Amino acid sequence: MDPYLRDVLDVLLRMLHVTAGIAWIGASFYFVRLDLSLRAPKRAEDADRGIAGEFWGVHGGGLYHSQKYRLAPAELPEPLHWFKWEAYTTWLSGFALMVVLYYFDAGVRLVDPTVADLSDWAAIALSVGGLALAWLVYDVLCRTVGQRSQLALALVGVVLLALAAWSASELFAARAAYLQVGVMLGTIMAANVLLVIIPAHRKLVDAMAERREPDPVPLLEAKRRSVHNNYLTLPVLFTMLAGHFAFTFGADEAWLVLVLIAVLTAGVRHFFNLWHSGGRAWWILGVAAAAVVALAFWLQPDGASPTQAGPVLVAEVQAVIEERCAACHSGASAPLGIRLETNAEITTRADDIERQAVQTRAMPPGNSTGMTEDERELLAAWVASTR
Image 1 (cartoon, rainbow, N blue to C red):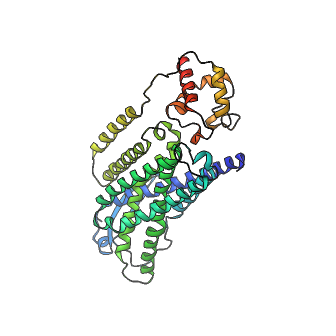
Image 2 (image 1 turned 135 degrees about the horizontal axis):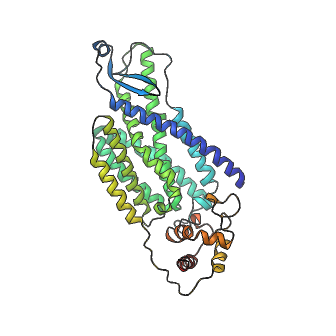
Image 3 (image 1 turned 90 degrees about the vertical axis):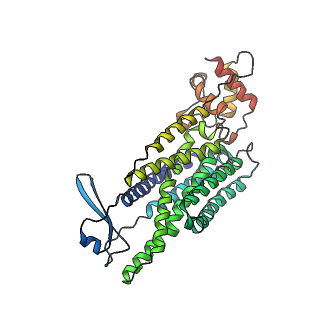
C-alpha cells in the first residue's frame, strides 16, 4: 500500500475507532454503574407497576431519575433508544485498522522470522482464525461452565487468556502479539452485543408489542454478557495502547506480563463495580498497587554492560542506523517524530535507541530489516560510551 494512503487511512480509522470506543465504553460503564446502584423504589405504586429499582443522579446542571423494570412495562415506549452502533463501529473500525496496518504490511508488522517462519498469508489466516476461535470457545464456555458458576468461568477464562497470549507470542511479532490478543477480546465483546445482547433485547420488544410476558432467560444471559464486556474493557484498552510501551511487549516473558496486567486491570474494574453497589474493597487497590510496583521492578532493564571492548565511533553506529532504521526514521513522517538521519539526531536519541533496539528489541518492527545481534551489541557499546 502507498505509505501516504496508509497514513491517511490510519488517521481516519483511528479517529473513528477512538471516538466510537469512547462512546461504547462510556455507555457500558454508565449502565453497569446504573444497574449496580439501583435501589428499591420508595413509592408503592412504582413497585406495583413492575419497577425493580431506581437511581437518582445529578449531572450537567440537572437531576435525573432512572428506573429499571423487572421485565417490561405494560406499554411499548416510544422512542426506545438502542445501544449497539457504538459497539459495531468500534469493532469494524478496529478491524479495518488491523487490516491496513498489519495485514497489508504483514511482512513488516505481523511476521517476525525470528519468532515463527510464517508467510504473510499464513500469519493473516492464523490471526483471523484466532478471532473466530476466541468467540466460539468463549460462547461455548458461557453456555456450559458459565451456567453453573460465573467464578469458574472467570478462572477458565484467565487460563485461556494465558494460552492465547502465549500462542500469539509464539506466532507473531512482539507488538502484533499483544494487539492480536486485544482484537480477540474485542471480537468477543462485539459478538456479545451482536449475537446475544441485541437479540435478547429484540425478544423483549417483540413480547411487549405482542402484549405477552417476556422470557427472562435471554435477558439474564444478556446481562451476564454485558457484565463480561465491562470487565474486558480495560484489558482491551491496555493492548490497544501497549504498542507505545516496548518494555512490556518486548519483555522476555511478554505473554505473562500481558496476562498479569489484564488481571490487574479487570481487578480494578471490579473495585469500582463493588463501589457502585455500595461496597468498599480497598484491599483490591492495595494489591493492585503492590503488583504494579512489583511488575515495574521485574521489567526494569538489567543494565548489563556490553561485552564489546574498545571505543565505538558514531560513524559505525550511523552505518547500522542507515541500513536498519533510516528507512522509517527519516523525513517528516518519521514515527513519533524520531528522525535518525544525522549524527546529532542519532546521539540525541541514544537512550531511545538503547531501549528500543537493544533492551526490548522492539525495533526494527518484526526485525524486518534484519538487525543482527552483533549490531545490537555495537549499539549497546556505543550508548555506554556516551555516558
